[in-house]
Image (cartoon, rainbow, N blue to C red; front, top):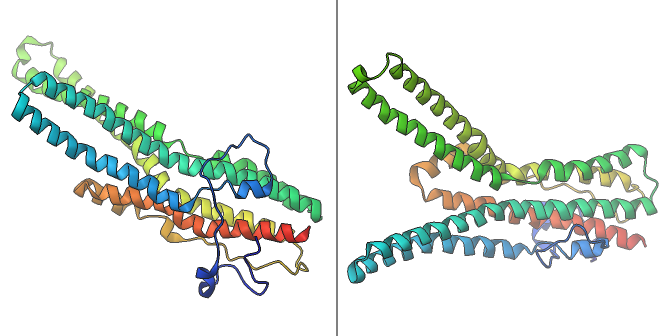
Length: 317
């Protein structure tokens, strides 16, 4: 690759715009045996991230407009309630599918990276251990990193969110149903046993508490994790990079000082974004964009660190 001058320190501000990023396809097969170079050239294309989000954004915003237009035309020219119902059900199924795809897409953006990068670290360590004498301390650290990385940072937020939405909706409907029943019971109290009124109140309270818990653990927590995942990954990879740097002898003339790019702006202000999204509705689209583009922002520098290590190992052979 050869993209670094020997006198250059990685990530000094004055050099930030002088680096070159190498990337190719988005797909990565973690089961296939490949070389370090093949691993690097199977990286996600950074420019594809914006295209992926743009496609989902267009679908999510255009479909409601097409639905409204279709309903208007059906009522104006056909006037068939059956057709209106059919189009409504079809729209809800397609729209729910796109939202589901969008949720899984954000998980996949993280998981594909973690799978490939874990293999990258394994291949890099193998190459380094062939060249340098690696102390047991560093060997144990690298092995620990490759085990922890996929376990701790791969996402399954989409599944949790889907379950949470369904559970919250069911509990919320139970709460509303019994809340309505509370007024009916109050007005017809003489026809009910003495404890019916109290029993309904207990059911409402329990359903309300369970709804809040479901919303917290299956909707809020997964959303918060997606909001902060790239910041958390950057902290983890900084430690991994420091360990690999310690393996490389200081006498190596190609060794650089790596100021790993831990960027606090990767961690969006969750509470502010969440509240504004609820109050405005449309702001969630902006927030969704920020979460997807956090990967692009991170990879612009994370890939450079990969190139540095690969370039250093190549020059050693």
